[in-house]
Image (cartoon, rainbow, N blue to C red; front, side, top):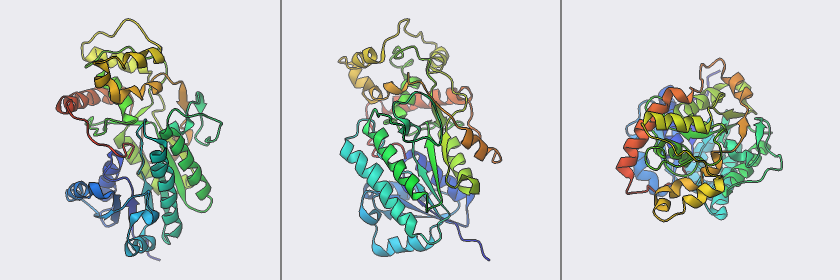
Length: 366
């Protein structure tokens, strides 16, 4: 019996994580094939990026998860149905202030359309669905990987629609080989510091990295809550390891730092390495938000304001299942102390280059 040829279908390209994941999958499966779903306005960029990749052949198809049949022509859709072995669903609208209608269209309806494709794929071995730790909403305390519906409320349409999408995937997992991934806030590469998303949940990481350097703000509250960030290379490597693990079928895993440092500690380290003094006073989250609305300050801090509620949120994301499933792969989340300097250096260099422009970002989670 011949092994089924690897053919991955990836949504959300050329988003931050999807871009890194596709490059990694192409190298890991040089004899395989990848198909990436790209919104029409990003096709030229995606084609340019893919032309530089090594390894497996990568095809670009123009479409949108929010459209029926993903916006694909009939022959394109049927070709996927007959050959795809792995689906990696990353496309999402992750803007923390996105209108509810838009967030639902992309995150919920888009996920439903991807599930419809997966149900028709005759060779499907795994559907990897990218959710987020923040489906827990405003819950506090220890949050387990097998918990989803706990009567929680949500801080944004992003959180609520990702929660609704995960409910759809969990129901579909009764018939499909599904693994649900819940990353914490994804920051730059642990080896290079590279990150190319500066909106949505990534604002939290940028806020912490840059505010002691550009605008020394007091942290909201006392900063004792854990800083839930993970480097993008860990997320990519863990995703591939889980996609190959038969034990991960039906699992939901938190991709988090198992020993996160506090937001206060990270803030102090950043300020110390930049030789800056932190404000000696603290503000409540509400007072900090009002401060960020002051004319002059508001323009500089606008992208970060929506992320402030995450800085002092006492949620501990248990990752026991993830640790068990990744134990034999050698994939581990590095401690923030090990790569913080690289994040600072890259963020500062990029901030200086982009300080007068704000890039358009449609799906920053991906």
